[in-house]
Length: 382
Ligand code: ADP
Ligand code: GN1
Ligand code: MG
Image 1 (cartoon, rainbow, N blue to C red):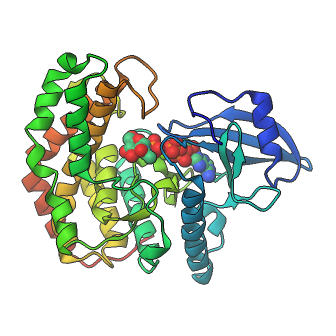
Image 2 (cartoon, protein in one colour):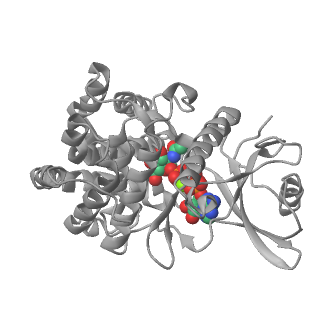
Image 3 (tube, rainbow, N blue to C red):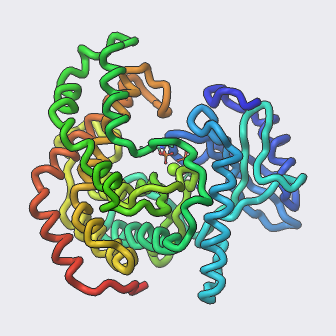
């Protein structure tokens, strides 16, 4: 049975775990890697007959993902589908353009170890992720990659995927969870975040908008990523191109709008997600333009009118939803997201809410830009 992710894994144990994956060569080192909020990620180097080869080793957070088997099945199916498509298109390097799992020596996809649920991926070389956007080219490339990812899965049967975290983007439920946390106030923190609580309460009316569109059938359920923050897209070191969309744990049926919105949340602000100088936090129009341009170039081939209509709004909604989640976690005592300092979740919440305000102020401009772009013909220039 997997143990709580909160207990760190000793290096010796990690080495034993690594040995159980189907790797050729001698283990050189395993070091913590990345800045995800959920899983524990390690960079592992293997000396393969004189050549260093790198891999990603990850401990899945089983407090969050209750069924590692379902998560790994989803990922296996989706990555096989994409790899097949890439190969059919004559792509010379599919193993760099979608995640590739390295199985365990016994053939299983993941390791059910007393220290947790582990898996191993090929390390995607010559590319990296960014926690904060630096150039419009990066925003455009990431958006093109997200649109392409959705496009590659447009013919993937929804019923082959398990909903690994039910109601992940059910904004109404997220709102009710926030309200419960506020009412219970187990840490006595509510007083400290009065302005954020007021902010959230004042926006309750937006939480149902996309859910209603989904329920009425106006907005189609598709295979979506559901966690397309900027640092889940690897950008090529040499060309800047979006090479691979990673972190596929939440691939499930959903709305494409959540993916588009989450990229806007994370790639239009000139700061990190936990910036404390709130006056620096705002939506940069040139970044939004780049995201719309990039996303349209790949997703424009399949988006419906209704989806296009809600693109600009989705940035505001998803940013609000994730702000609510950070606030809820702060009120509950930081039990979900990894935190690295006191008040970290509240700082993150404040940044999201600043972004919501910025999206609100720019709503008409954003909608107009999306409409103008959607009047042009899409096409993937990459
Ligand atoms: P989390 O779910 O905790 O966010 P991720 O899967 O996003 O974990 O991994 C954390 C970081 O590790 C990523 O942002 C990326 O920089 C790096 N990473 C993950 N998978 C790979 C890979 N296959 N190749 C290279 N780097 C990777
Ligand atoms: C988490 O795993 P990571 O860091 O890419 C979270 C997302 C949030 C995001 C906020 C499974 O993503 O939903 O949007 O933090 N993942 C999960 O930065 O809850
Ligand atoms: Mg991640």
